[in-house]
Length: 218
Image (cartoon, rainbow, N blue to C red; front, side, top):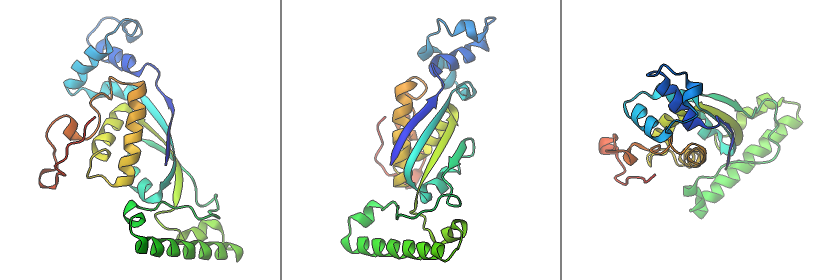
């Protein structure tokens, strides 16, 4: 898995803080942004629950080598934009798939997994050699098939995404991706994402009896 931050709102902390402060000021945000204390202002405004101000910041990621099982979960986050590698126009000639750690740790399971993948790709290649279009041959391909995807979310949706997907109870692959995305966001926007992550980094776990009992640290 490769996760890269392609683009982001420059000076996002200050811009969002200025936008928030402009709601209570006669001055426009372009004047406020020059001398604003981003940490103080955002802590107050976001702490009051006014998260709309951080929608002014957007972040675009390139993600490579993740499974379609992951992207099926990812696109449930609807306040976002996605561009995913097409299996209709891109022929999957070489076997490329994600193997779960539980399978890797069991030699017998690994053999079953790899043998099955080899059969799938052999059948896929045979269909293509028979003239079947890639868009139809792809019906054989599994959830574990790798894909590339470009993701754009605003900061408010990212906080929600990190709250759900950085949790220990999230599926392992999307949790790994979310953790890497959060690390990249903190590097460029430390104020907005200071307390980002699963709910247990900010207070009690909302999972109740389903809680893992192991709070994650930011």
